[in-house]
Length: 240
Image (cartoon, rainbow, N blue to C red; front, side, top):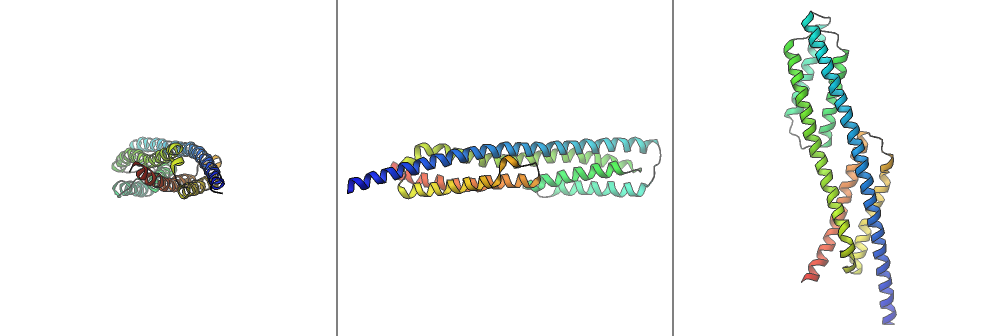
């Protein structure tokens, strides 16, 4: 009876290990799809921000030439718009930022608003505000680059942590007891299910897509942290 039980147990362990390998492979594939989808979404936002910046600078140059040539209509309206935009740039610059996605999107929104207001303006304005807004646009470009770097670095760090744990499973998983194998399988299966629910191949470049991708990788990293902890406990016991 004992030999039969041992054989059944060994067979079950092999099936669990096979399931873990399959789930790890599937999760690795999903992470790759998420990375590619995120690159596409970031590229979309980066191009839109660059286009808005170019539009704003072009409108500023036109206004500066027109203001230099003589007075235009509705001076008060443009003066008010310019002052408001300068103030908005200053608020974004001085705000205590943690490099969050909302900060990047806030800069993008401001660039779009600036471009629209300046293109629609048919008025002259004080040279001081024209100069200040031109300087603020340079600052907004640098701020966006800095914020985007922080957001991307956080994503890359989590992605790399996930891949590191997945890469360690092949050697570490066979040394786990039954309970450990079941826990690892449970965490991997849950992460795979989350990834499938996101449908990374169908993401279309909206702000929500960026939040969805980063949210998934954050949750996957947390689950794989648990897997790493399970593997670490077993390794410490075997080393002792």
